Image 1 (cartoon, rainbow, N blue to C red):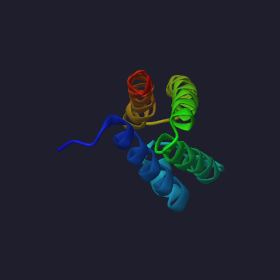
Image 2 (cartoon, rainbow, N blue to C red):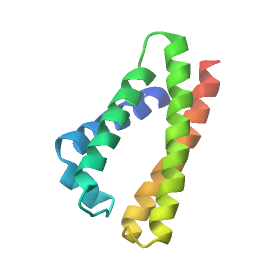
Image 3 (cartoon, helix red, strand yellow):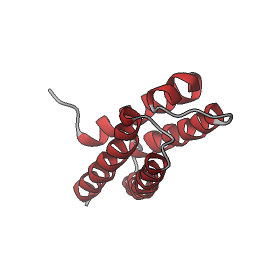
Image 4 (tube, rainbow, N blue to C red):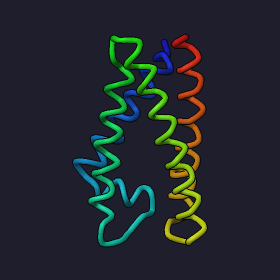
Length: 118
């Protein structure tokens, strides 16, 4: 049996967040990002995704809805940032697909989950 969309989103965020926080070098490698602050940036992303994942799993509908809205805002900004990094040649093609495609997918999933909350 498949997990509900909200649970899938939350578990994905929690997993990605935990990996990014605990092993930032692996996360930045997966996204094809490098630079002197890439580990720090990965940890910032990681804790944000952990917080969003926990909020999406809240038992309180108002908290879930607010978190889904905030997550969609973050994901839309991530998508735009991924496009900028790609245009600047600062990520690999696979990293670009993960950055832009993953963020765009989460915007869509967030919208669906938000509609289902109503």
